[in-house]
Amino acid sequence: MNPAFAILTAALLTGASAVQASIQEPNQDSAIGAPDSTSADGRLRALYEADWQWQLQEFDRIEEADGSTSPGASLPSATPAAQARRTEHARRMLRALDTIPAQQLSQSEKVNAAVFRTLQEEAIGDAKFREWEMPFDSDSSFWSYLNARTGFDTAEEYERYISRMRDIPRYFDEQIANMRAGLQRGFSVPRVTLEGRDASVEPYTATTAEENPFWAAFADMPARIPAAEQERLREEARTAIREAVAPSYARLLRFLRQEYLPNTRTDLAAEKMPEGPSYYQQQIRQYTTLDLTAEEIHATGLKEVSRIEAEMRAIMDEVGFEGTLKDFNASLRTDPRFIADTPDELMGVSAYTAKRVDGKIADYFGFLPRFRFTIRPVPDSIAPFYTAGRGGLEACLMNTHDLSSRPLYNIPALTLHECSPGHSFQAAFALEQEKAPAFRRQTYFSGFGEGWGLYTEYLGREMGIYRTPYERFGQLSYEMWRAARLVIDTGVHHYDWDRQQAVDYLADRTALSQHEVETEVDRYISWPGQALAYKLGEMTIRKLRARAEQALGAQFDIRKFHDVVLSLGSVPLPVFETRIDQFIEDGGDGLPGVEYE
Image (cartoon, rainbow, N blue to C red; front, side, top):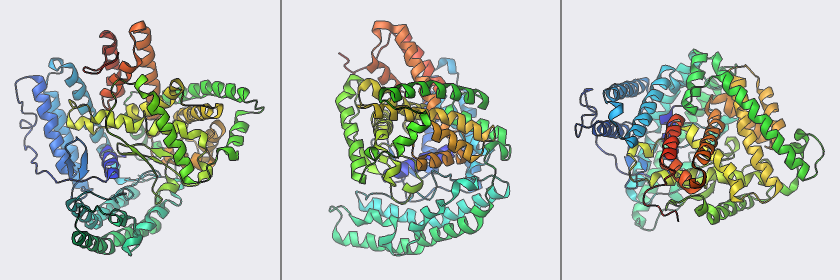
């Protein structure tokens, strides 16, 4: 999946909006990165600031006062011409970056330069394989994140939302054209992973506005908007839903059912697609930011699976279970003690976990962000095919669909990962680093970000969050889940595993429900490489923490270590390693201005 699309969909989930800036892109390489001083730092800042302004205009994003971004009045172009323009822009950025002497950059700007270079290289890599011709997978799709989940604060924001709704016909036509091109060359999501996914489109075909998910933002508008203005906006929304939204989704649904799904590829392996081996290696590099081969990753996964199995068997002995690991997992899946009776019960377990974390957080972090998150259920329209949860700046999502497939012993680990001190905490921490350039606040590398999420599940042991052997087993099961991904992703895309082989491997080794197992396997099949980021990132963080603990001895302070990690924002893992080596060299210093006594 194109990183720009991933960033866009993540931003759209927030539902925020603001005015569009009017920005011109420089016309010549010499104009890009024109220095605000003669220093290398100044030239670099001018370069990435010019690029940031270009990105805002290109994707119609608005920079808010707090550093976040919001969608403007239109949806970004998805045409091949637009993709070519973005690719050429990335090449121009790299050429300009290459003229700046890296050895003259300050330490912080060296980090910014490395991040900036990686972003441009990723954009060029995606373009090489025309990733935009496969703009969705079994987990995420371009059509699922266009509607706001909640309302807006001002009439102006509602007007921009309505304008985006009116832009959907053009946007969908472009995406359909791209998907047709992908089909023609055998570049598509495997058919087996898409069964039933078309159902997620159906709710949006409702022509009665109040029955369409796009209406949610208008159901409860703020009192500060005058009643007459509210009614005008609602009437415009009804028209947009009836004339633009519903027909576009209906047309997309027909395309998916009649043309796309019947003609998608039947091979599972990414290496079976056009330029497959090179494509899969590019995906590995993009999502992990590491130079590893599929063979190396597969071997690492097998080793981690064996290690975690030993820890799981110790808990089986603790609770007096006699039988195999597969038997124990099966017994947990069917034990009524661990199944929530209502969605609120599951949400309550998650919320209580988050509050227990609040009671421990100051022992593990010196800098505590002010930004608060909430916990919401995954929207009904996507919940049947969605993963167990997902974190974000404003909210972390918990999937309450099919409660029997969401065992409660997994919820503490899931909450740590998605909410705090995982993704929601991580996003707020990064947002409040005032010295970070704007482009860094919106950057996300899966190896670092998802590695941190999995690391926080492990950290929950030290924090005392897991209160029972079953919750500790849930944490190990989640760690096993991520270790098994290393084996399954490479097994499918490099060693040509079939779907059932992947399903059996995951089901036999984790306490995930059968529904979750199948949903997850379909995700790995349809999204090559992404699932590798979690475990490889977590292993890197734990390895570097151990290095710092050994080197610093009594000087090591876990709060300072964590603050330094998160203050980086999101970076490629080699950049993270360089920063921790510097942390060690500096004697384990924390963040300036933070009291650690």
